[in-house]
Length: 488
Ligand SMILES: [Fe+2]
Image (spheres, rainbow, N blue to C red):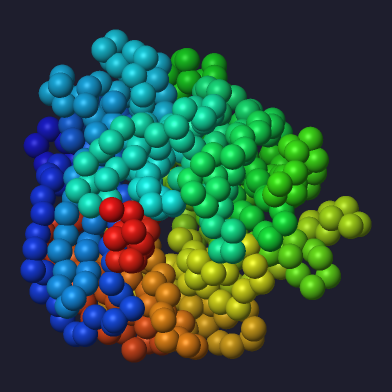
């Protein structure tokens, strides 16, 4: 790509596309299940302008695009548009990049001073008929789910005090409330964390702030039926380092991890902190719940060190992917005894966990996640934020049944699946995942696969081809046709 560096962040599958487009009448191979009527929204980072400085976190800094794959009535269409963030609009007006390194405003061009730096590129969150494009370093941008036009920055009708909202919210399946949080809530390197509850109608009903043990990358969190959990892993930020033009994040192997636990509807003064192992890292939690004994079980895609190569470089670490010691770890917390947390391994290494929305915060029997196929002859497809794409989809069972898998051949990879529930009693629903296939040194083809969630090895029940280059997504969200119609 002209003007872009010849590095992993900008080549191959990660080559910038930089184009808004719309496609109708997509080719469908197979039969789309009746349950799959709606829109698969995806957040896709795609830098419009070449960077003016080296930035290991560049994939995470790409301008947010929102894409919609609409499926219904035996037809499918696709559209993708930039989120019109303040940052994107300023750079479009200037005709060049104005913002420097990942989450370091001290590296920006003078014209960028005071502008909102977020790129809204991480998760399209759907709640109460609103579509919000999120990234943890800023407030969300509201996007029209039908046209993908950006309405503007969203602060819940002026109620939100936090300067940030993370890209991982938790929605209670019974109350319909959305639980969310923001860290560095009042500025760079701050320990302030905002904890918010948004009711079923979308009203921000409560916002409380607390101090984390230290400023860390709090990417995700978890709820149970009665509690909320704030995990802290030692990927840390330091204001002096930022001012010196350094990296936002450094991973500290000698620092403790923590989990803060408080009643969901309680006061932050009730927060109890439980110490975890030193040096560990996690981006995504599969779920949390209260077991029959009242203990909290907290399931997370854990590793012994931060997996991002650019964060390892900034930390003076160099741990090969094979030595990350990844596992699906269950941390057990006994609030009655207050004893130390214990860890059990309940699954293999992997990330991007998915559960049925109805299982959120409740005891659950199964979930899905992506991982690397160790038996594959050949390297994984290079690309995505970490530099290597997943090629094995797993269904993990927590009742003792065997793990199920769908493996891709060399040269193909999965993006994060979304789960679509089925209306048929006893049916586990469907997984929708974009599959990228390398067909030449710099050529890729893309198709959405629709897979029976309980029968992965059968392969896709249907494939919907996208006859255009796509960049890897971060996260996605499924919204049914009925919910979209209700939001009109
Ligand atoms: Fe995430």
